[in-house]
Structure formats: C-alpha cells, structure tokens
Figure 1 (cartoon, helix red, strand yellow):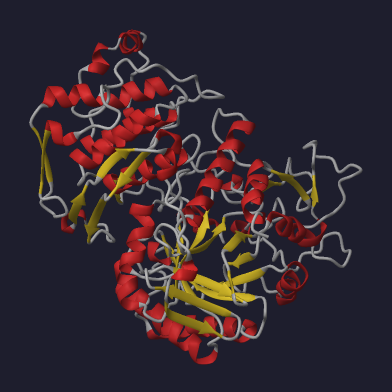
Figure 2 (cartoon, rainbow, N blue to C red):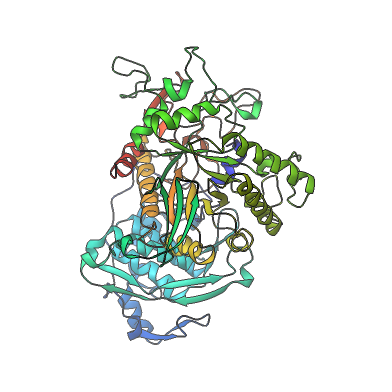
Length: 635
C-alpha cells in the first residue's frame, strides 16, 4: 500500500464528523451525575403520542403529550430541552466559559460533562445533535440514558442525514440503531433489548441524498432478563445448505437456507484472521523512490529476509536488545498471534514468491493476493492525472495483462487463498471509478470471468471502499464471489443495520473486511491510554465480524484483515528532500479514534520503538495480546 492509498483508506469510510483538535487531557475526567435522568428507563412512546405508517416511507411519530414525554426521557433527550438549562452545574459551566466555541470541538474532549452540555444546546441538525449528545452520555458511562438518547433519533429523526469528514452522506438513524445494539450486548446485565427495528434507505449507495427513500420501523426497546438479550448462535448443522461454490479440492463457499454464508477450507469452517504486512525500514519512502521490497531485503547479509526472520521483541521497551530478546521473526510473531492469512496488496510490489511459500509451509499462513486494477493508475499505464479510464480498451488490456501475470505466477501455489481485485478503487484515486462506477464494476466482472477461465480453484474478491456503490457492484459483478470492504467505522465495530444487513440484502455475498484498524496515538493522551483505546477498538471490530458470521447476526462475515502488523514511518510524509527520521504525530484527517484524528504512522499492533534498530526491533502493543486471546481460543 502506498501513501496515497493509505490516506484514502483511513478517511473516506469513517462516519463521524470531527473538524477540530480536541480539548483533551492526558486521561478522561470522572463521570458526572445526571440532574434529570427521566422517569422511565424504557420510554412508552405510545403513551405520549401516536405512530403512523410504521414500516413505510411515510412513517411519522406525532407527540400528543410533550410535557409528559419530556419528563419520561429526561435531560438532553428530545423533546426535553428544559432540564439541562435548569441544571446547576450547567450554569456553572456557562459562567466559567467552559462551553464556548464550536460544538464539534466537544466530540472528543475528556470532559464528558462539557461534551454533554455543549451538544445538548448545540444549533445543529436535530438528529445529529441527538446522536452526539448520546455519544457524550455513553462515554460518561450513563449507558441507559445514552440508549434512550440514541433511540430518540430513531423515533423522531429517522431520516436525519449528516456528513462525513469528506462530505459524503452519513445516515444517523441506522448508526443509532447500531449503537443501541452494541450497548445492549455489552451491558447485557441491563436487560435491555431492541426488537423489530429497521431503517432501510433505498438509493443510499451514491452521494445524492435527494433520491433517498427511508422505510422506517422503530421497533421497540424492551426490558427483560439479561440472559435473553443476546441471541444464541444457530446450530448450522440443522440448516439446509442451498448452494455450494467449490474452488478446486480445498476451498468452498457455502450458503444456508437462511441466507448465511460460510467459507470452508479443507472441509472445515475457516474465518480469515488476516493482517496487512508491509514492514518498511525507517528512512525509506516511496515518495523519494527508496522504499525497498521487504520480501527481498537482507540488510544484515545473513542469508535470511530481515523482518520475517530476524525481528526481535523489545520486552521492556528500553530500545536495547538484551539477553532474553533473541531474533524471533515476524512470521513467528504472526503465528503466535493466531494469524492465518496475510494480505498482499499488489503482486509486483512483493515479488519474492518463495517467501510466501515458506510462510505457508513453515507457519501455516495463507495469502490473499491482489492486483490494484488501475487504482493509483497502477497496471493501466495511465498517467496519474487524469488516471485510469475504465472504458479505455488499451488500458483495460494493460490491466488484464497485469492480472493474468498474477494468476499465472501464483495459481498453482498452495499458499493462495483468494484473489483480490482493486483496493477501494471506487473512491476514484487516479481513476474514474467514482465518476463511472458502472464501467468500473463491469470491468471488474469481465476480469473475474477471465480469471476463472484459467483458474477455477480460487475465489475472487473485490476490495471496495466501505459500501459505496454497493448496488452497482451487486448488479454488475455476478462473477465476483466475495465482497471485500475497507472499513474504518469506530470502536463499536461496523454496524449490523448500517453495514452487514445492507450487504446481505443488496449483494448477497460472503463478506470479508479487507481493512480495519486504529492508530495507537492520541494528541495529549498518554501512550498507555491510546494503546488501550486501540486494543478496545480492534477487539470490538473483530467481535463485530464474529457475531455476523454464519449462524449469527447477518451471517455473511468470513473474516477480516487488520491494518496493520507494524508501524510504517513514511506514511505521513517525509521532510523535503530527506526521509523520515522521527515518527510523525501530526494529525492527518478526522476519524473515529481516541482524539478524533488519524495518525497514519501509528496503525501497527507492533511498533519499531525509537527506530534505532529498524527494521528489526518490535515492541508489542496491548492490541497484539488482546487479539491473540480471540484468535487463538478456537485452536
């Protein structure tokens, strides 16, 4: 992955809107007491108003008893606009001018009470306002009140649309449903459960909100026993298999009668516990043409490839290799972690095929091998500007030639799990896929058909940017076996209502998250706090994949690829005329992370320490050990 691909990957698919550096402390402040928690934990909306046209595009909730509903929900929740202003602490915050400036500056501060007050009085689109009020409550630990606030979005503002950092639509009601689902599962002891809710948005997969049609059923929040909150996984052995796609003797995609998909390898269920592996020596950068192919690098000239075999773990993080810290190698560290797949982004960038043969033979780790298919103008031989044109016959021929080179070189290798076409190419970086998506996805399918003519033994995946143009993909790519998505949606996972369910209903494919990740740095936050946040984020993302695999949730997830194994110090740019010599902590763009920003050089679950022994030194972050618990538990 090059610098520009990393930038787009880590920005476009995030769904939170954050513009300013946070007013952050080194650690969050203690929680606060609610002035008015409301009279009802589970609000009986039918008592205070009327629902009309549930399950249709004409849905509406009409309030009949506004005063009663305000008393039931409590402060900060629509239509209660009075209680916050009466809160004595709110008045003190105002007197001390703690609530000044843009409300967007109060998304990620460590003063949760200030965040809550500022958003409760914000002049903002009402659904967005209610959502971020709920976020502040959730962060402060007021989980029941936060759930009520998220549910108020669905009841009152189901057609609310915000904007991402990049100006693309963000649908607030499905996001709120996903937060409710996450919190009721995480805090199952509350006994709260959301049933029968759904907000379907037709025509949502482009950037034009004027053609969106909202089909709304707010469902119900109910309270019962904690053991009833989480549905038990289905017994797949009792479900009929209605479709099998076999690829050679080893790989099968199975579809059950309930629409769930499962990948099987060697006759057994196989979840992709993947990782992006691109070790780079500090001081090298593609920006100045010095980034070497890691699969061939042997700087110490000992006859072994450096990072895969000679890396060592700095256990006490003192940046000195001492006794008890021998070379172990990244391949062994990945095996110990529980990795079973490595993603190769573009086949010509890591050209040592033997290294992948050894990775599989000696460590049992397979590879997903990709071709950029014209993204960043790679393979098409087009200039960067205007970039790849997916309707140009000569460029199509050039890209197909590149793909066929990949297939010819790797099709008989036991290490190969699948082919991956593109890398969030639909975002249109140095190509016209965002302007002519039909032409792009049609070409993807033509390439898939050509691949199958010479290699029927491996499934084919597309790597999409989130679910943008999902409907056009589904219509134009019947020969693509797996939907892949680079998705960075926050510490709550990807979202059943806002991600997995739309893919199941529109595309009906087994789905792999081709990238997910989180930086391990936050402005003004301690290293320990930021690394704890990264660990929580990645574990929640993995759990979101697991609970939407066959037998659970949407039932279409077949795994995910974590971005990434080790920090790359060139990602945020090098000083003019000279490569990076320090790890960059300048925020790149807004995103759903600890302080609201991406730090592209900090996405590894291992670091290179202070960089004095690159590319060999590894400091294992907390996320490494937390993911290890999940990835190794089934072995």
